Amino acid sequence: MSKANLLGRRDVVTQLLSDRKGAIVVGGLGASTYDIAAAGDHDRNFYLWGAMGGAVMIGLGVALAQPQLPVVVITGDGEMLMGMGSLATVGLQKPGNLTIIVLDNEVYGETGGQASHTAGNVDLIGVARACGIADARSISTMAEVEAFKPSMQDVSGGPRFVSIKIDSANLERVLASRDGSFIVTRIRGALGFGPI
Image (tube, rainbow, N blue to C red):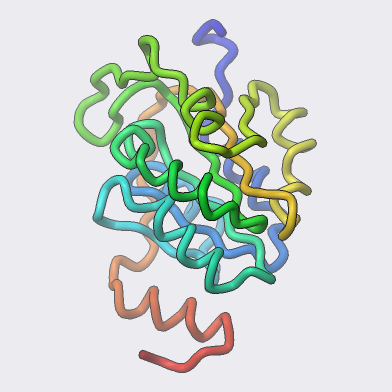
C-alpha cells in the first residue's frame, strides 16, 4: 500500500469507537492512548501510560474477568512487537469477547520515528494466526473499518486480531487522566465494583 493511501489514525479510532456501547477499551502506550482520548474520554477507557507491551495482557485479563462484556485493545505496532508473546496466551485462552486492533504505522513513533519491524518482513497477522487466533486480518479502507466495527460487540466470536495500516502523522497529544488510581477506580465503578 502506498503511503498516500494510508488511513488517518484518529479517523480510524474515532470511527471504531463511535457507538461503542458498553465496550471496555484498553489503550496501548503512546499514540493509541492519545487517539482513544481524542475520540472521547469514557469511564470504560483504560489508558496505559506505562508498561510497554502490556496492553494485550491487560485486555486479556479484563476479557477473562468480564466475559459478558466486549473488550477492545487498541495499540500500536511497536507495542505489539514488544508484547508478541501475549498473542500466544490469547490464542490458548481464546476469549470470545476480546478484539485486538493494531494501528500499524511501521514506525516507533514515541521514540523518534525509527522504522519498526513491520516495515520489514514481520507479519503480525501471520504471528497471530500461528498463535491460534483464527480471526486475524488486515484492514485498509474506512469502509472495512465500518464493516468490522459491529464484530467488536460480539462476546462469543473472538478472539479477533486486526492490523490497520495507518499514516505516521505526529498529531497533537490528547491527554486524559494519568492518575492510575483514578483510572482503575473509575473503570471499576463503571463495571459496578467499589474501590480497591
